[in-house]
Image: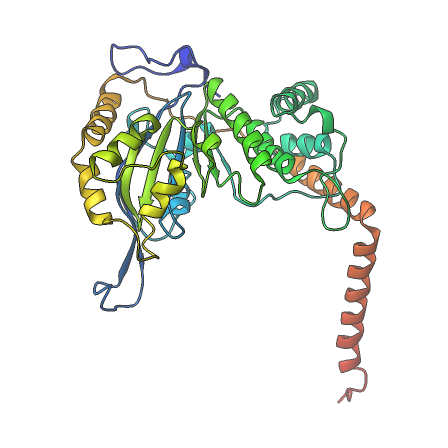
Length: 383
């Protein structure tokens, strides 16, 4: 990863985040996304709009939470920001330090954590981390450096006490749900990304595990990471951890700005959050168009578009283009094909050894299938 001193400069002003490691400001402006569909009364042009002119910005040390009811476009937005969507029609700008995003550079400084954990239950935390490091870090990184990096990340994510514990699956006990989520995040931190994008990092966790996972994410923000995440129904404690909040409804921006200004903004539109009520739950229920008691969403969208908060966001995005140092074109080096093949062979062999029942069942199935296919030609006439 690049340190702030290695960034190229186009303007005379210095990057205002030089005290933070790997500074990257991620912004998106008037971003829209549509997919092809059958022509109907609701879609006369044969297009369905998933996102409609959404804008936002996240800087180093900030945690930006994207909230909204189901189907509001949260996951689509983070997938677009993470450059994981290649189909459909995308319009608008996604910028890195005020400059149009370059795919290879963006991937070199960004990591993405999916909603579902993709972990093998037969390996310990350390084994999982070591193999992930060998599959992601270049050959120039020595074994000692890999061990040091793994140890640092394990300590930082609070996994030191369970480093020798199996991940676990349906056949064996292992890590708790919160520990698995932290392990998934830890794997993506091995490459020391500047930007971390998470899709519902607390999905399926209880309130205690959710709070612990979010505490570690806030800790990463304090270290200078730029973090964007989607979250469904945060508790009041988790809500207070956010720096910025984006509220979506049917693909439109109802609010995007500092968390501390969110309650006053909605109050100015006639929707004052009741005392002692979780603001996140209240505002999400307001914009949930699946039920009849929702607010006037078009009015809320229009109120935000004309607000000072929206103007300030536009001014900051424009200022970034003029004042921030831009990243040079870089590409994250990958390990050699031979190294990846060796690690995958070792992982697959060890997984089979530790799961003998599944291995022999699979072998028996292959034998039966071969026998069935063979008997089809057993009595075939040679003529």
